[in-house]
Length: 137
Image 1 (cartoon, rainbow, N blue to C red):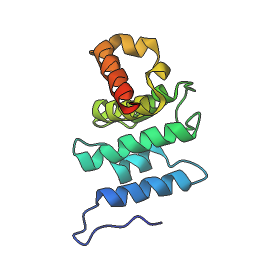
Image 2: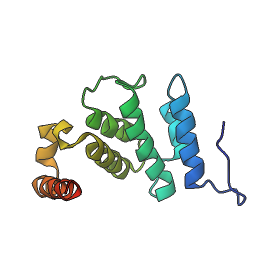
Image 3: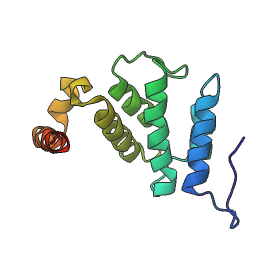
């Protein structure tokens, strides 16, 4: 495993990114308890950002999660549902994972049921479309 600790004994973002890569290279995903133990699910960025990134990457690489009782077709919802299942600061982690997934797959893959209850979703979609159009010029 490439996971290591810094000289101060504190885990760095780079360490956690390497751990995410190790997790994704496994033939079977790690258990949720191992993800929480090693990536975290707390309020500090070091304990939430890597977990959100892993939630997105895992949802992109497999259609269902062995530890979760339901199969979720939408990759955006899979990412959000997995992040929530990890507990802790799940609203923040799920929001980040969902934002990454939405940016990757596009808002067309976000179910309407979710868009209807998201704060300012119409305005956010308009801004996203404007940014995309600017990037294409």
